[in-house]
Image (cartoon, rainbow, N blue to C red; front, top):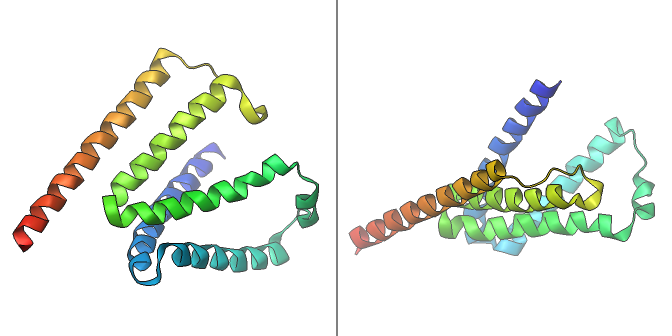
Length: 157
């Protein structure tokens, strides 16, 4: 089952990058907030159908959840909105690496302190180096994108 979860997550990452690219392009015509709205509206419609046919939980349990847990919906919306804003300006790969770097940084902090009732995994030197390498890769990818963009603009003048 673990292998399937890795495969599913890999496919999820592929769809996320494709979505980022498409949304970034679409936002130039429709607007950033409007593109984000369309994504969540479409997602709501699909999930409503999935819940009706395949749901096994209790949708009304949402009303009983602690309010801080409901903030996850806002955080997901902010992630998508910021991604839609970033892609047309810095490119898909720089946006995705920045998103991953942000996830890893907060993930290490959450693990280290055991926030949100998560497993406590202390920050060690291996994890610190891993974060450093991700941040270094973001730097080189961003600088490479910026250089290519400047060269393209110079050729168009």
